[in-house]
Length: 280
Image 1 (cartoon, helix red, strand yellow):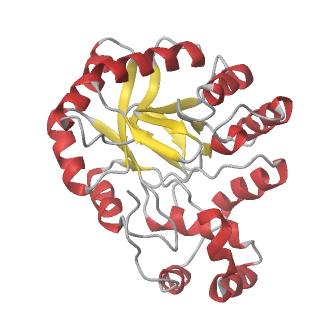
Image 2 (cartoon, rainbow, N blue to C red):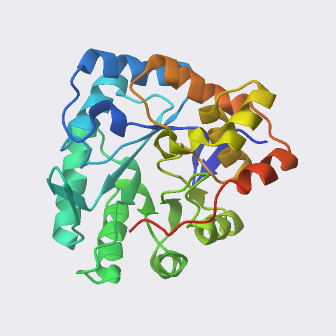
């Protein structure tokens, strides 16, 4: 199993880090502890960090900059276009002028002149998709974003986007018990597009599975490690981004990259649950 992947010219470790858990949707309660986790992730070989402007209302990006800037050898991916008006509400916002403003603010918070991977967090159904793509393309043309990715898209949306600009990644919810985006994974695999599954361990819910526990015991690993190893086995373009605020869990997650599954193990795991309905 290859442990690295090229996203455009970016060469990354196939097991990244999702920074959401360090702040949730508010500034970090223990900033020093969060910084230690980010720095330890890089020490362990993680060189792909995923964030979003909506995480902590920008505080997550600021935290990453404090911990890791100037990012020597580390790729930072952020997302724009999904706002959080209240604690229980998410709202896509894809107006071109808003996307531009959001990107400018992310550049400032991350302390960079060009974002490695800028992802459209959600497609806004109230704005023509072509207009949203055009705004992203303009940011690339101006040197403010190196590469563009999409989040929570269908195969049809991916095909439409690729007719307009170069899409190097897709970030959809996907894990052992939530496989509603199998067709998107297959499409990304065929086209060599990075697929970044968010919620890769399903908040630990499927760790309650007796089958998962049995196979994990057979291999002498944890259920979380088995879940990540399955994703890495599923396709060579998959880049899981497990997040944690725990140093112990971080080390456990990173170690999953050293696990080799047989096709027999994978087949048993894929029978774990039926394919679910995609998140919207």
